[in-house]
Image 1 (cartoon, helix red, strand yellow):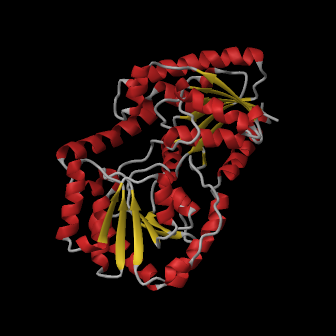
Image 2 (spheres, rainbow, N blue to C red):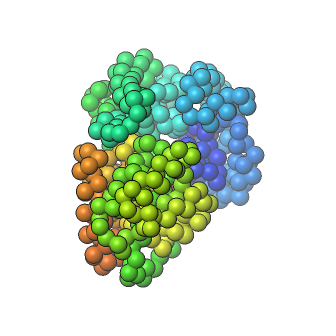
Image 3 (cartoon, rainbow, N blue to C red):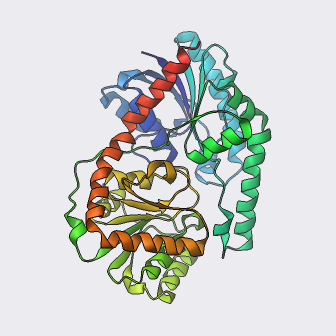
Length: 411
C-alpha cells in the first residue's frame, strides 16, 4: 500500500466547496492508500469525530497547521486579497511539517491537493526524494467576454483584467512554473485547465474533475409523463451564473407547458432585477422563486423535475451539476468549463458558447425538443446511473491511484 502525504488546506466532512471536495478525495483514496494529511485546523473537531467511524479511518492520519480566526475570515471572504500572503506562509509551514513527517514515516508520494487554484502551488515540489503530484488544478478558465453584454463597466474591467492576469501568472510566475515543471503528475480539473497548461507550458496533464457523484438508488421516470414540464435552475444570482439567460430562454420557448423553478438568491438588487425581468418577458406566472432552501430539499426537487438548466459561463466543476446527475436529472448546459467534461449526450445536451442572444435561442430550442420527447428524457435519466459510476468518488480515487503507481514506478 502506497503512503501518500496530502497537502489540503481546506478539508472537512459534511461540507461542500473546497473542504468537502478534499474530504471526499481523502476518504476514498484512504481505501487504497495510507494517507498523511496536513490541513488547517478550523474543522479539526468534525474530522476527529468522523474518522474513527470509517472502515478506512486507520489509513487517515491528520496533522493540523492552524491559522488565526482573522485569517479564516479572510479566507471565507472570497476576494479578500490579504488572505494570499497568509496562505503562502501557511504553505511554507506545511512544507516544513512535511519534512518532519518524512523523518518519522515512509512517504512514497507528496500530493498538492487543494485549494485547487493554480496561483498557489505550495512548496512540496521542493522535496527531491519522492514524486510530486499536483492537482486537480483549477482557476485557468477565461471568462467569455461576449457574455459581458449588459454588464456594468466595473464588471467588464474586472473580468477582462482577470483573464489577462491568469495568462500572465501562468506564463511568468516563478513558483507556479517551477512547480509545474517539477511535477511528476499534473491533474487538470477541467478541459480549460488542460488546454491552458498545454498551450502556455507545453506540458501534459490528466483531466479529472475535482468533484464527484454519489450513486443513488433508482429514481422513477414516471415524472416525465406529466403535462407540466419543470425546468430547475439552482445557484447564486451573481453575474457568471447568467440567470437572465435562463429567464429569456424560457420566454423564447413560447411554450406554456414549461415552468422554471429557481432555487437560490442574491442581493436585494439582484433578486429585484431578476423578478422585474420575468415580468417584462411575460413569464412571471411561469417562474417560481423558491429562494435559498436546504440541500436535501433541492435534491428532492431534482428527483421531481424534468431538466436541470445550468447557464453558468464561468465554472470549474460545479457540485450542483454532479448532484443533478446523482439524482438522475438530465442536464442542459454550455459546452464549456467543467460541464464540458461531465455532461455528454447520454445524460443531457450542451450548447456552444457564442453570444447571449444566440444562446437564448439555442437553449430554447433544446428545451422545446426535450419537452416534446419524453421517451428521450426517460432514457437520459436512466443513463445517469452509468454516468454516476463513471464520475463516482470511488472511480476518481482509482484513477488517482493509477497515477500514483505510475509515478512511483519511475523513481
